[in-house]
Length: 313
Image (cartoon, rainbow, N blue to C red; front, side):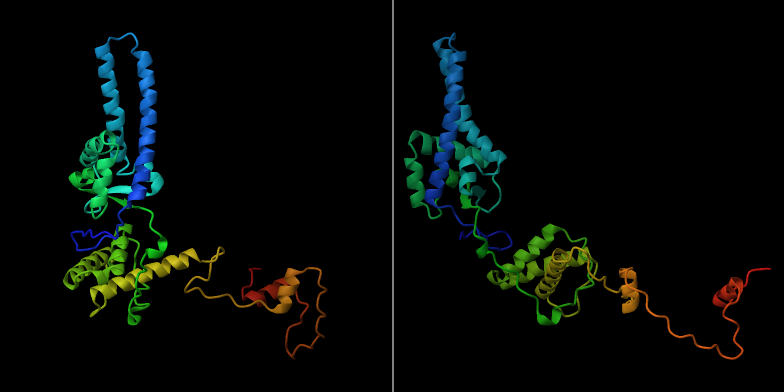
């Protein structure tokens, strides 16, 4: 791994590219650039056949500078350090602090590449990469850049440590909708690399991230909870909610706080579900008690007894 350190004393896990992969990327870039240059040269030769020798020479020099020098600089600037060869090999050019390169970095690398790669057939770049500790050629040294690997196996990714057991479930009611993804990423990166930081620097970084979370959620942490433990608990709650959302059944589960409906009796359910089932035998008639009104009364009277409301006469 690279020894790059940011302003917050965080060691960046950047792996410098090895010489074989860099050489393969350069070969791919040279093949592509030279193919384009030859096509443009043939087109210009046909178009400038009627011009004098000085004009043809000026056009040739201009095409050389634009295609073999200007094109790689433009590609690295627009793609933030990924040319065709580097994209095929999973490489990228970054600054010494791990940030993306800009036009001035690509300009210095391209200008030095004319001397290192084109004029000396790559001998100077090869020797410089072998001597350098991180495999940098002269263009990288003068531009302050480094070629790193983008494709790192997923097994090397560090997992976020779990929160303390006494904090599990303490943040279930916290509103996390206003927390941006950038803040979640910073919190996860801090938790995965907190053991690599200086204790004082790590405590300050944890307090800053905790203050930002409190400002976004509007709820202060419980009394006596350290900043790093608070971050671990909130991040664990966010991951638990994402897991529940991702693995929820497609038909939806039981809503928290909802009262389940009473079960339907077996006889009623069977009669409703299958109309072909024969109806049950009615129980024997029981004589009404003394003083009760007759059963076969009018519908108005029965409706009044059932609802307690008698319509006007």
